Image (cartoon, rainbow, N blue to C red; front, side):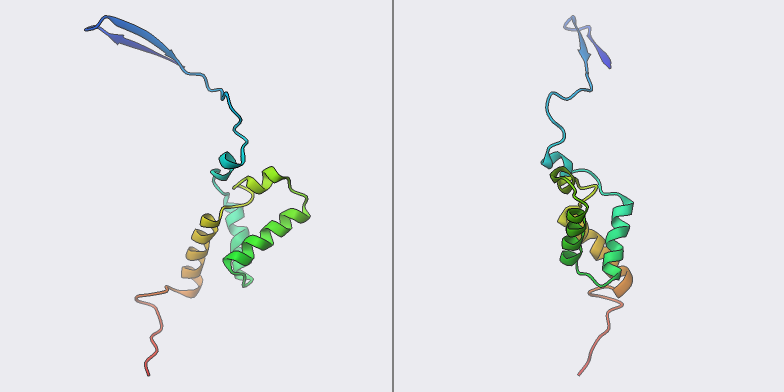
Length: 113
């Protein structure tokens, strides 16, 4: 992709060429953590939650399944296959609100003594 720059006042001309090639590795653990988790993975975690697992139990169980499948270290770092904690926390909050109701406000059962 080339962009032509033209500035008549300063009589400057230039060409900027952009190459879509990386000069560094993009398969690092840090880069793989930023990948977006898939809807299938979200559904898998919702099934774990439907089975009564907490967030932490679901994460540990999923990692044990990956271990049994002989997944590589790269797979464990890949957020498309092994979501980060914050992603699972977000899924759990949505799942909990849908299945168990809100934590506060309207819809919460009030207990009076």
